[in-house]
Amino acid sequence: MNPRIGIIQFPGVNCEYETARALESVGMSASILRWNVAPAMIPDFDGFVLPGGFSYEDRVRAGAVAASDDVMETLMAAAADGKPILGICNGAQVLIESGLVPGLTGGRIDLALAPNKGMGRDGYYSNWVYVKVGPDPGRSFAAYGLKEGDILPVPIAHSQGRFTSAESGLFDTLEAESQIVLKYCKADGSAPGAFPDDPNGSERSAAAICNASGNVVAMMPHPERSTWLRQVPADIDSVWAARRNAGLASRAALEGEGPGAGIFRSMRAYIERKP
Image (cartoon, rainbow, N blue to C red; front, side, top):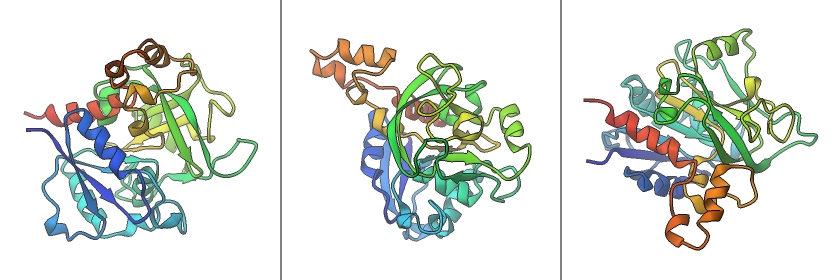
């Protein structure tokens, strides 16, 4: 039986349907759930995704209002049971605001996704970037089927995506424990340096961070927007673009898997690893 994934539809999110298609493209079954569904009515899913968008219009801070919704109690229970939970962009902001990531101090909010910094301008930024898989990829479900050093071109679209913390030494801990799942990088995998390779000024160039158990991941880039090869820009410096361009004469080739599919395939492999 295919793994069953629940997608939480908060007011204002706008990526739930494309996320469902991405999950189903790798053999999982996806159901979209409204944020106010009664907990007793939520099926026993194998995992959950919080999609991108602008829940509650990003009021107070991005993700802050959604993080206090009753449905988060269900997600916290699922996280405690070891089920994978992926937050993408706004979903990542919700996971950070709820304390589920990094989850080091019993639900306390240790991280923030602050406004982008170092861009030479303020506000929302959307573009394709490169991210690199960190060490010990099996540490989290999001990189479970990937290899250390793999470089994935993926799109970003956010204004509050800078992973940071007021707690001294927290990122040392996250780095030492391999909780920084993905880092922004240049096309060749080297450190990003300045904007635009570093799109938001995140500490340690973090693009995705997991909790201590590795089953909850807050990821700012959008893998659902790079799930198919046809979504990859033709002019970026990547083997993925070369594959896309080589397949231009074949619709079937363009419908092949893109770099973002690896994240969802990893989620499926993580679920299916259980006896």
